[in-house]
Image 1 (cartoon, helix red, strand yellow):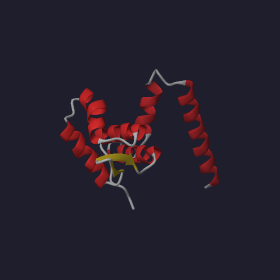
Image 2 (tube, helix red, strand yellow):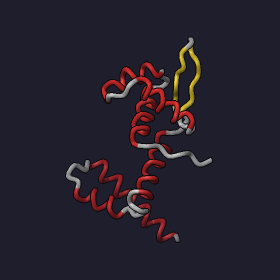
Image 3 (tube, helix red, strand yellow):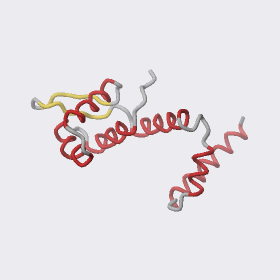
Image 4 (cartoon, one colour):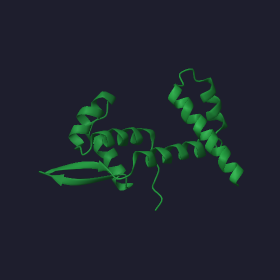
Length: 128
């Protein structure tokens, strides 16, 4: 089953819930929503939308619904990146790579990860 995509706000909310699960709408509204100017009703709507899309589940615990993620964070991030590349960059990663080359704050760890990815891509090409 292909999951529906998530928007930027939904992705940020999903990441917050993943780091603080299980959590209630009230807790998310107070700790996450208030600092972002989101009303409790907006937080509830977003969480229910994520539940409908299959990214969250809820269970009643002492009369309060507690939400937790159903997908691994990496799966959600991969889906968001894929959607961004396809929709915004028309399937080309070149604009992103150009942006990365101009970004001044690439850490040593990020650079090592990029080098490892390039090496893996080169290896895969040789195998094909």
